[in-house]
Length: 83
Image (cartoon, rainbow, N blue to C red; front, side, top):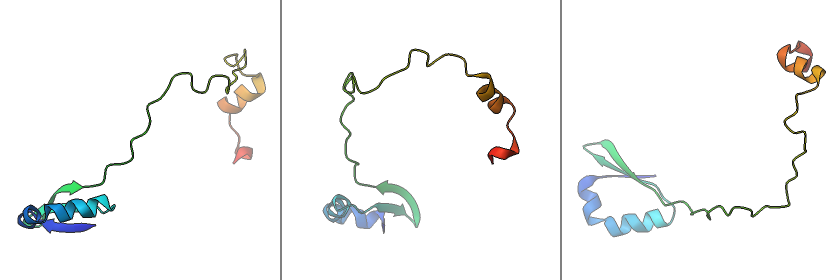
């Protein structure tokens, strides 16, 4: 991370951008107080495409059926044995 005061940043702007492009973070301060941060832009993710994973996921027909009594009781009345 590189810190600099505002008057310096005006004359060194091209150098600051070069440093940011190389992955460095720049903090700009005024009278010793940080007021801004220049960081590289993260890689843009591709947009989601509906249906891209069609056929790769199978949902059981009873996925929303009530839990069996023994499993439900384990959630409602946990014991120290599970720790």
